[in-house]
Length: 401
Image: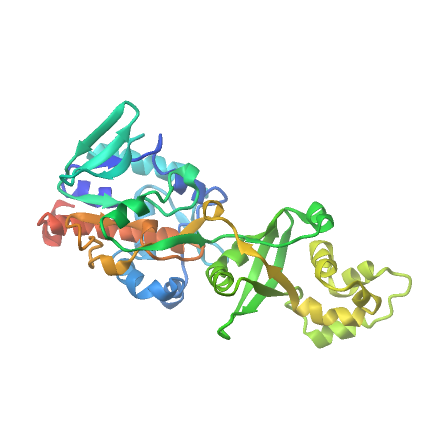
C-alpha cells in the first residue's frame, strides 16, 4: 500500500522481500476465504482495537473499510457481505487479487527484489541486505518498514527485526501470540474421538482476576492439544493476558444457548424409559456428539445418574485452559514498535525518514477483517507520510493521481 501511494506520485520505489515471492502471508490469510474487512458500524469496528483504538482510528480515517472495498473494486473484483457482516471478494480467493495488484504495481514502476533480507543499518545509516550472492547496501531517501509480527516465521514474519530496533533505542513491546488457540489437557479418549470436530453455537464466557466479564457467541474447533477457531480468537487477547497474569484461566461454555437452565431441567426430567443417558440427552435437548463428549470429559460420572444434574453444566461447563499456543503457531501477534515512538505519519521519531507499518506496530485485533483493514490503512498512511517527508503535498499528489 505504501509503494502504491508513492509510485502513483511519481516516486521511484524499490520493494525488498526476504522471501522468494511477495505477499505470502496475505495468501495464507485468505486460505479459507479472504475476509477483507467488516461491514459493521464504525463504533463496532473500532471497538476491536482495544486500548489501541485511539492510535488506529486516525489510520482508518484516511483509509476506511469502505475505501478498502472500493480499492478492491478498482482492481477488478466485486465484494459481498456475508451473514455475519464479514466482507469477502466474489470467488473468496486471495491469489487473483494479489496477482492483479502486483501487475498494477509493476506496470506503474515498482521494482521488486525478492530473496533480499534486511539485516539492519551500517555505520553510515545505509540499509544492509543479505542476498543469495552476498551482501549489499543502499541509502534511500526514505524507508518504509513493514516486517510483520512474529507469527508464521515460515512466511517471513520472524520477528528478528525487534533486536535491530532495540539496538537503535526504539522501544518495542514484546511480541505475543494473538488470534491463537489454547492448550487443554484432554484425556486420550476424548482427543482420539473428537480431534478436528467443530463445536457450534455455544456461548463462551469467563471472568478475569480483575472481575471483568467477557462473553461471546460463536463456534470453535477441538484440536489434538486444545481449542482454536473464531470464537477462541475473538477472546484470545483477554484469555492470553489472564493466563500471563495468573497462570490459568477457566472458560465456561453454554452448550444450549437457546434453552434456559429451568427449561433444560424440565426436558431432562422427562421419563427416559429404556433410553441410555446419551440417547436421552440427544432426544430431549439435542446434546450429542462432541458436546456430549465435552460433558463427559469435565463432569463427574455420578452426575449422569440423574439427568437433571446435567442442566447446570450444560449451561456453564468449565474448561481449564493451560497455555496459549506458541507465537509461531498463532495467526497474528500482539506487541511491536510502540506508537509513542512514532509521529502521526508513522515515522519513527528518532529515525527521520524511516516509517513503520502493519503488524510490526504495537496493536492487535481479532480476525474478521479488522487485521487486514488496519494493515492496509497503516501502509497507506506511511506512504503519505513519506510524501510529506519528501516535501510532496497532498494537493500535488491529487493532481498526479
